[in-house]
Length: 207
Image 1 (cartoon, helix red, strand yellow):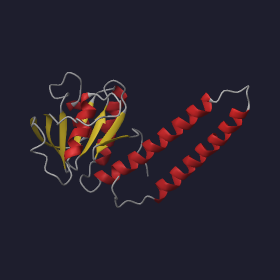
Image 2 (cartoon, one colour):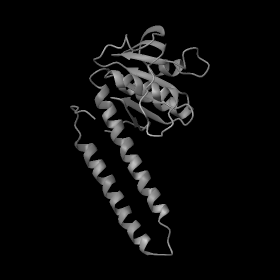
Image 3 (tube, rainbow, N blue to C red):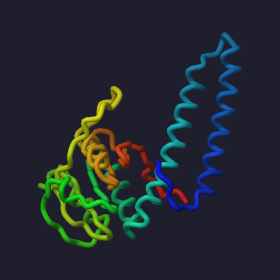
Image 4 (tube, rainbow, N blue to C red):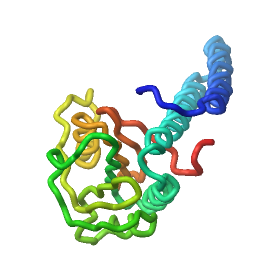
């Protein structure tokens, strides 16, 4: 990820504590491996889950850093993403940064309203005529909804990605935009930036 001006000290301390916990689990795994009567798989699963939690915490923190200079609506975005995730309502939200996006996006329906979590949630409500497309956010306003994004053609290394995720990656391969994604199938949330996809936490933002 690129350098961002954020106070990373609290996050570094938290990650350090989490990594120390993983190291302890790895040390216990070595002990388990030496005992023929115990199975190592459970410990390995704990380690894997630990790394996943660390990645999600860090991604949530950097998400706020990347959005902060471009919109004051981070909390509304966070609330909307959490609610959409809980209900498994698929969503695709583009936050424009420096690069113009007109040439990359197939324009949808103009909205021109101040961003709020309730408006975002209503746009992605199943059955809404705009719920399958992407919402475009510029500064603190929802510019349009039902937009079509370019799909990524990059090899995903065997991962099966849905259309929303491929669209999120596709746009960020060609611009500095940040794209939030909620999976309709799993409710899991992530964001795409610089052509990469990162899982995020849907709870309270990381301090």
